[in-house]
Length: 121
Image (tube, rainbow, N blue to C red; front, side, top):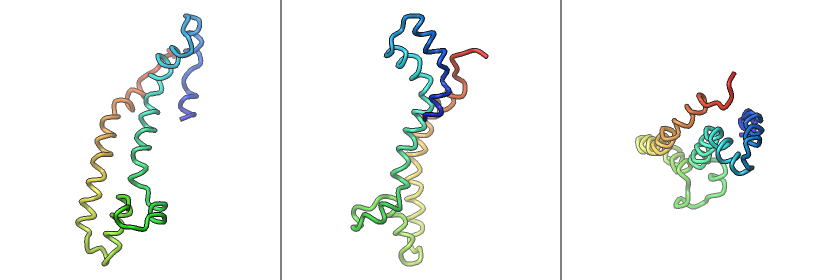
């Protein structure tokens, strides 16, 4: 995120200061609209991370009622040589649905980050 924020030109801040904008106005009206693509990426990764959390959850959680989705799905396949593979596949699809919906809803922020720009040249 820092690398992305470093690419926002400082000239925008300086020109806004010359025009009389305060720090909060510069932040909310200039920097934040240009930073929405990286904020969308961070939000998407923060949403996806618990779905894929396996190692720590596998070590710490002992009762099956408290398993995360990844540990529970692994447990289905690991037992009895994958006898519940169809249930595992259905669970994997159900995990992918909310992630795909969130990705599609954030798609406009990703595209706007490629086309947005505050300076010419």
